[in-house]
Structure formats: structure tokens, C-alpha cells
Length: 465
Ligand SMILES: *Cc1c(COP(=O)(O)O)cnc(C)c1O
Image (cartoon, rainbow, N blue to C red; front, side, top):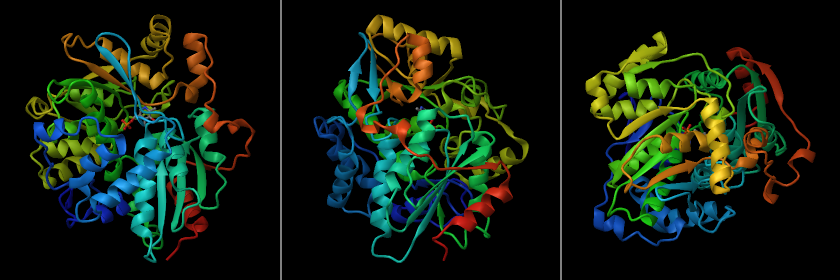
């Protein structure tokens, strides 16, 4: 498979190069040159496969030319072997219509592990035997950082610098990053928002003073390999609920539009999906874009679902590219405009092609109430992000014969204070992260200033060419 840029100005590249590069040289995002498609018979034949086997099948068309089927399966088995549940992403029934897809059984307790455990192995595979080395520079709203650090800590040829917004992530989230003392791991707290951090990371890619002496790479969900790994659980859960013979709806708590875009890709690949509910918190750029065509960046509010405190959703560019007939020059011009003006308008006509999506905006009270009710009515403790997805799912009014799967994106123990406030229960940390609060922390706190951050990285990187 060859990959092209959403901005139409980069040469086509294979899967291995796209994984290592992260962002396309023209500032766009990589997408496969076409969506591979399975027939309903082919999808039905995947029913009952163990997770890693299903993953290798779904990924096969995307990795063709870079990995054989056996290699892909081996990498998936290693990646998903680190999960604490045999089913990797088990499904739990809530009531007649609603299901919870538990994506938090990886080492750092959020769905980011599903993608990043694999990406860690992919990096190692593609770098081994070469004299190449990579410097990963990332921005995290909380969960990407810990999952990425866990996936690459101690690995050869890779160094990681992770930026997080100072004091805007939970203590568990911070400690999961800052207590990893491997010499190839560097944590930076910036005095600003996630969007500030993300903007700086993006700028470093096009800054030859940095991305020259260092070969930098991305692990944010702009990296195609991450999205690819997330497609798998849409198939996996649909197959358990009667798919592909009947359509399934999914509700996805959303920030950067990565997870829900993976659902869109599953649909393009032939999986019958009735609806993808894009559930945001009060940071509602996606809600506004999909309901009114108003994609304009707003102020970022701090909420109890910090992994979704985002007002620019990087992966939305991938959807725009499709909606505009996969014309990179149009998307490129649109994104340049957005970068200058901070807003763009999506016409009704353009949005008509996005009818698989519906959007919901869930505020703090609704989120708390959903956590509380889910505990009372179903004796189930869910995390605040999941609660946003579930609230949206329960209020969508989908026909009662359509199963609705809410993606549970984090373990409730990651957000213990807010869970306790909503339910009166303080979830215990699972034993696999046991002594988190006794471990030593290490991180640097820096001003949200591009020159300060980029110079810090340049000075502290050991993988200089
Ligand atoms: C990252 C994250 C999200 C948002 O996912 P996107 O792919 O950015 O839309 C939602 N919930 C949790 C717990 C997360 O870590």
C-alpha cells in the first residue's frame, strides 16, 4: 500500500516510512491512496478469530509491501500479549441496547495502549538492522504520553520527548509518565494548554533547525499506524454482536478525532455501521463542525475529562480530505486558511457526505450524572470520558434493534477523584501499576515558548545525526 498526503504535495510512501515519519513533509497527514475493502462474506469469515489474528487480517492490506502476514501477526501477538485481559478489548453488556467496549486493559489503562503498544514494536522492527535513530516528539492531553512512553522506554534507537500541559492532567496520568526514569525518556511540563503543546510539536516538524539534526517522529494520533490499530476493535466488537449481518452504532468520546476516524475507516472497509456518535465535552469544536459547519477554534476549557480538552482536532483533516473528493490541493488550501484564520466553514453539501456521523456535546453535570446512574443502575464504574460517550449514546434515540457500543477509553482508576465525587466509590489502582505513588518523578517545567522548548530538546537529545 502506498500513502499520500492530505495536502497533496508529498511523494507517495510505503507503510514503514509513513510509520517512522508520522507527519507528511508538506505538513499534511498520511492516508492510504485508497480504502481497502472486504466483502460481507470475508468479514463474516473473521468471526471468532482471536484478537491478534483478527488484527493481522485487518491490517494486512495497509502494511502490504512493508510486512508479511506472519510478521504482522507476530508483532500483534507481542503487542497484545501485554494486555491484562485475554480478550484484549472485551465487550460488556449494559442493557438491552447498550454495550461497553473496554479498551483500557493495556499497561497504562487507556485505549491509547491498543495502538501504541503495536507502534512501539513497529518502530523497533523498522529501525533494527539500520543505523537510523528516531527522536519522538509528542504532545499529550494525558493518555498518549504514558502509553507512548511505556511503549518505547528502554528501546534502542529511540528517544522520546513528551510535552504535557502543566497541572492540567490527573496525578495518575502525570506519574505514569514522570516515574519512568529510562534514559531515553524526557518529560516536559509546559505552562500552557494541550493545543499550545500540539502546535509547537507540529512546528518542529517543519523547522529544519530541529528536524535536520534530529529525525523527529510523531506518536500523536496523526501517526497513521495508530489509527490503523484502532480500526480492529470496531470489527472485533461488531462481529460479536451479529455483524456484519446487522449494522452496529458506536459512540466515541472524542478529542483529536482519531478514535472515531478509525470507525469511519472500518465503515469504508465494508463493515456495516449504522452511526458513529461523536461525543465531545464542552470543548465542542467537532460538535459545532458536524452540526452547524462551524469549525472554529475556541477557548480551551479545563474539564474532568482532560484527554478531550482539545479545540483543534488534528485528524479532522483526514475526513475533510475524503469529503472533498480526496483532492489534496483543496484540503491543503483549506487547512492553510484555517491555520491563519483559526476557523473555517463546512458547507451543508460537504456535510451531507458525512452523514454516518452524528454529534453530541455533553457538559460536566450530564457527565457526572451518567457516572452516578451507571453505578446505581448497573453497578458499573466508568471513567469520565466513557461517561461522555455513554450519555451521548443513551440520548441519541437510535432504533431499539440497533446495538449501540460505547467505547470505554480509560480505566476509572485513572481519574479517581472525579469518579469518587460522582459515585462515592474510589477505584483502586490495578495491581499492574501498583506502587505508582511511591516512585520517584522526573520532569522539566518550561514556559510555553517555542524557542525555549525546541532549544531544550535540541540540547538534551542524544540521537543527533
Ligand atoms: C485520547 C483520549 C480520548 C480522545 O481520543 P481521540 O482519538 O483524540 O479522539 C478519549 N478518551 C480518553 C481516555 C483518551 O485518552
